[in-house]
Image (cartoon, rainbow, N blue to C red; front, top):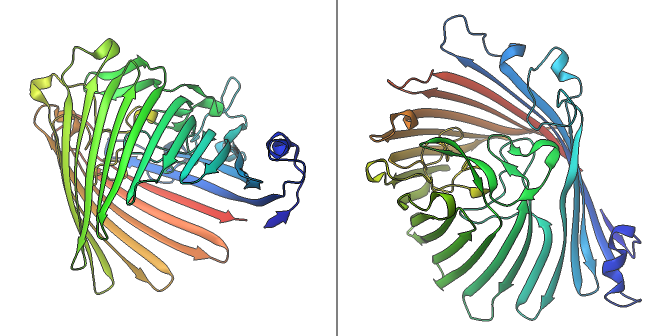
Length: 408
């Protein structure tokens, strides 16, 4: 929905900076969704799938406004999650904790609140926003998505080269649930991190990032990133993607270099390769990744610093075999995936296997089946996951996840 010459108190200050006669245009949108997941493990006497004790769930509503006020752009998004009383007889846990003694009260927060300014080939974006970079990014697999208070500068003066500089001051990402309790923001990097030594609390205090995205030819792209996550690590990420004869090839190299309270540990390096194509309407993907262990002297996974390393951009990641498995030091992983449309339904199946000679607790095999469709105006995605841990101490389990949502 588009509204012209709209007067909103939230953007009044922005409009004033562009002149009294500046035209304000705003697009309003939103979405509502319901998230449900249940798990069954192989422990004797454990409750089965769809039992209240094995299930978690919550509902979300978000409303977003974005547009322009003269030479400035802006975005506002407010999000709320609530149990809708599901905990009474359907689920026993929630996806994002609210406030109060039982943390089941409604949680709500400003997910986005930013302005943009463009001048020539340079664009600045300042404020609360989502980010999508290799080692610090917003995750959307859970009911709600984490955000960052950041300043980002993008320049494309050089032909076929995009330069990016960013500073991240705060974030509301957290390990496991993606979004911190009640959506609260804290200094970026002040988080609990999953490592081979167990969960470690690190006192991060913001981060800087710089990147060059280069496209030397039509079918080849090179992305170079460097990070300084204060008091945690310096990091580098280099990836290349090339399309030839209908095959999409990719390779990457990444390094995490501990600083601050963990500076005595060894750098963690990772590399990965992938290949994908489409045959007869079926999209196919194969990928392999390896993360070094160096005799147990590594402590940092090659994964998302914003959420305690929960997710990773390594191409071998699965839904559960993610940053906490395939990105861990010592991991060697491969992934095979196939997907195809069947009428109004999309089908995807994937198998991910990770071995780890140094840290056996991170070995796991995962099989995923994901079905997506649209019923009336409701987007529905149903997922089945099966994981086995071989001879490790963990218990094999299977999960069912259902997400139903509508955009408005």
